[in-house]
Amino acid sequence: MDKSQLLELILDVYDARKEAKEYFEFFLNPDVARLQAKYEAAIAKELDRVKRGGYCKARISVIKKLIKEFSSFQPGFDAEIELLFYTIGYAMAAESHLYFPDTLTRGIAALIKRIVEIADSNYVTDKTLDRLGRLLSDSKAGSRYFRKFLSDELTSCLNVVTPAAKRR
Image 1: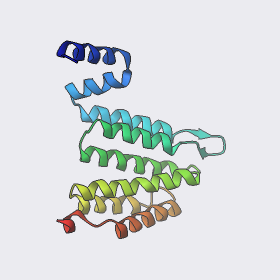
Image 2: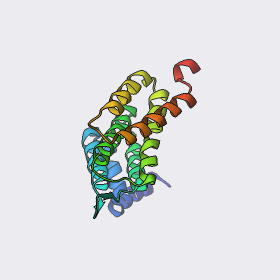
Image 3: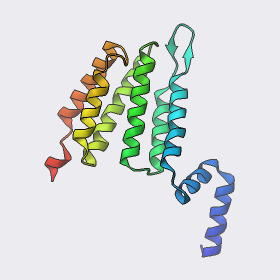
Image 4: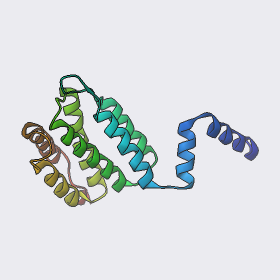
């Protein structure tokens, strides 16, 4: 394709697809805070799905898809970690008054592994682990059993992950 054909293709994609338009607009004017707020709201909306009797109907597949979409904008590892912390914190707050199915509980625990991986690969493991420890020890967030489950997941992650600093 020559330059004019490529330009025409980009303009067609921009007009045809909402996702492409959003990506191009972010690429031209990167506002990470606005993008993060948008995805935080979408994650909160998903975690607020409830059916009668206090059962959470949130789908971990939707939450993971939102996190993956956010990461596709390449906002930086710190923004990705922030979104993951937001998701876990919001889930802990919701779990304190809702019943979470096992799939959702395991999915939220898997997000802890993702935080550790991102932090480890970007050499911010100590700061991130300290923050995770504070979040998981907060007795006001989530039930004692949920916090213990997440803490156990963190412990198992730490036994598997070799810190990046030691790999150098």
